[in-house]
Length: 172
View (cartoon, rainbow, N blue to C red):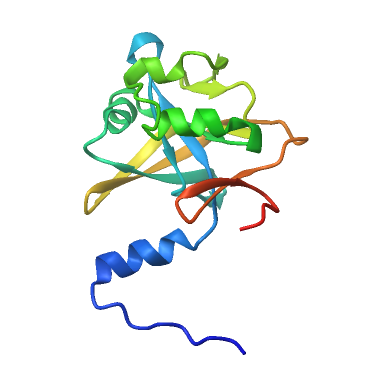
């Protein structure tokens, strides 16, 4: 017997949070800046927009240091993480106590053509020039034109599901 959905949730915010916990999504680390001014964050809010021109979007909290780095540098890199990159995801999710440029320490980075750092062992990295920013509530939707993409196709993606990081096919 299939159980019916429990609907509706009385509080829309809590209902959305609960619903999003059960939406599996790829994990990215979005980076911007150079040297000691590098900043980044772990995020799942990333998608392609168009192929002509090649364009993606990311959603970033306006109160974060990564937001400021993207705005000031006018670039960003979306690092699509593989299952072996859980420690990187945790670092940029604030789970290790590291902040700012210290979050990059212990990981290998390559500078992209736009200047944003790309994680050398990502499943894929997409470097973008910032072309548009749209404010939406507490976040900005950053739209970027893709200038460079790099792939490591032999890796398997890292997913975020129910408040945790998981490999594809992981039992839950």
